[in-house]
Figure 1: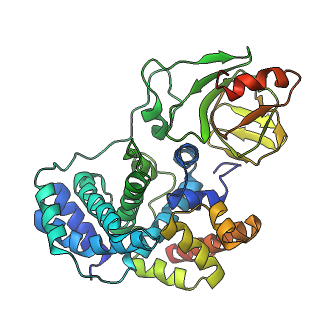
Figure 2: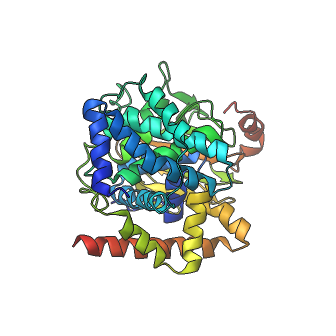
Length: 217
Length: 184
């Protein structure tokens, strides 16, 4: 069980299918790494199952059954699925992340301080990135106008709110300034989902913000 | 009525021998229920019908991945229907990967233990839901039926965000305690 599980209301949003794709990916990764949160999601899914079972008996449209039978006549039952294999070079990536790792994707150095891989996730309200931070390095001080979701995937980091290690989940409310520093040991890798826009608040912020808003950095 | 065991047997019959009669039985039970469930959020009958139809076809395709020791048939079908609802009603270009629910029930993971919910009939969870105070139940139902985040629910109900969060946490605590007591 991680020290920083996702808040339960977000697990409910996730289990109910109400989250946008970016935050849903953050939750999927956390749930894959955190047995306690996974159990909560299992329980919530069972609530979904119970709500479906609790629907009253209704008249079935016979034509619908006929159409479905005709369709399955042409569809193979697929072999039992196995979780996606770990990708070479991305061994730290839990299975739900693997489909998002496209061939040729690589780390890009940003502001000389950290590495980023921008993920292509549908919906433009969120910026979804993998960030890699060498031990002792910190992210530029920044502030969010919206929500930020972070899942630690390798190593660990510390900020004013605590220390985070693999599987830990952080949700940052808007307006909070923070400056995460990577813990000693292997580089910290995290998935970060940020509701746009992002505003840098450090000494260089006012020069860099136009680049951030244009998606250059 | 179809018991949890009967429903699981039907899915396994599809997996092992592409059993069309089993599919028809499963469809008769679940298709109208999934449709009714989807309609509760205000989705029109035609679109709800489509979600239900596509969900049941997916049940056929993925039957071999169903694991009755991890989840009941109704729970598994719920996760499939939920993903279909997102794909079809949000008109996504890219459908959700099956990983979404495979991860939740990943066979390699032993730590969480076999789900206590697998053996639960829906009546137990339903009973627990009915035992929740009205203000907690409403929030849970809105999330599932109307596909809304707790933030949107708070907005719509004109409640402080903190109130909605604490209702969700209280409801989950009761649910969890009851299910864990059942297990021990």
